[in-house]
Length: 604
Image (cartoon, rainbow, N blue to C red; front, side):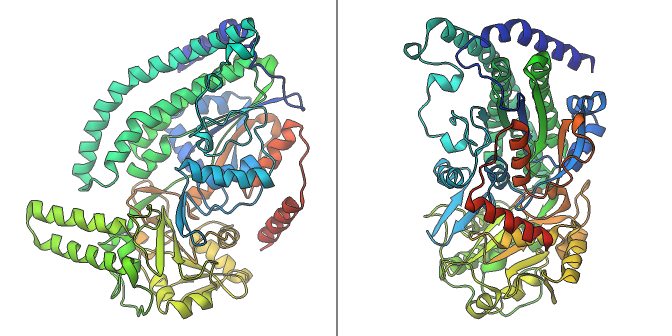
């Protein structure tokens, strides 16, 4: 604590006595919001309330714990909405409208192509629709490490603006020809002072990250017996996360010194570690500790300038649930399990006529054959056969690009503990009766799978949840209550409806939460009922697990206890922050319809 306090005092001194006198007179300086406030929005990606409390109790988040214990801030419960995915959360919070974003990846049946939220052109296309219908929250502000820009004037540091050409403005400077020399010199000096420190910290951490990452990866592969995703994860942990977190933190410090009216930064890193090692793993918690240190610099900068009246809000988009990969439970990939003709692995034989076929069925059959071969071949030959089986199974993920993805009448997108199953012969979403007619036995296969907790479908009278021989019609209060009991969250039926109302969601939505196999597959530190991850990962989000849905908000204590208890969807946060900014909500016909739909869903 003593070291943290010393670091905070050092940052406060530099901001008040060096950065503010320099940056406050630059051309990037801005007046406050219409309310007279300034707002600082700090987003911890993938950290649910249980994970945050777990980390604070064990000393992995000392800055945040001190912020709450010493005040003037409080920790309140909040909710993520569905799907529990970053792009869906950011779209709702930054623009305030209903959206058609069923996850991080999905398949667009109308355009017959995959959509990915790690691809700039897809993010830009979605953002153009959000801008046309919504009210951007970050006007006159700044954004860092987000998928969408939220209307910030410079969106270069959001994915939606990633392919735009770099300019001096992106580094807090302006072309000298466009501005008077003295204010421009102040901007250049402020950016140089801070980003030289950014470069130094990154350079210092890079070598350590490479060495420690290589050792830890070798240990993990030896423990788990698989290299799946490890090369990409190694690249992310060494380069992307270190670079992005440091740049975002120090850019926020500059923007605070300039007095920008609203600043939003998303801090990635923990989320990726939680996917690969589990949300309660030591590696994930150590990454959270690093982010806690970075957040400490930003908080210290805001506290150094009380006259600027910054309100701090620190929150998450979703949590993670500890999972076991479906492949470990089933003995085959989830794509093989769902799309291959013949009996399913890990469960009873279910009739499955006309559901398979096409390239997907051939790829699934080939992957299964090589898996069986790997069990009889010795040593390296068996490993090679298993590697090829996994390579062929990759084609069964419909989020893969054309050329890798196999085509067929059924496609599946495994995305955490949620999967979207698409019937590709019809461009619009199918109702349950149409799914049964076109793909006999498919819903039975899904409902009886040991890796699937629920199969959600669009019934004739509303959303339907299938589990084994059980059928829950979620418009019936008793059935909605039963789903809430089985999932472990009171709003499970509401969020199921939200998912099925999305046009781009699967014709059948599969949830790994409360899957039969979880009773014997709950990892250490997880809370029951646990979940099965459809891809190869050990921490997941996207679905309806309580660990994912229940998030947090650290906020000024003047707002009182339970200030965010009424938050059901991220659009509720948009309305709150819009009110705190003093800006009037722009009610359009589309927004009125959105709000009416939300009220109906809540009433259900």
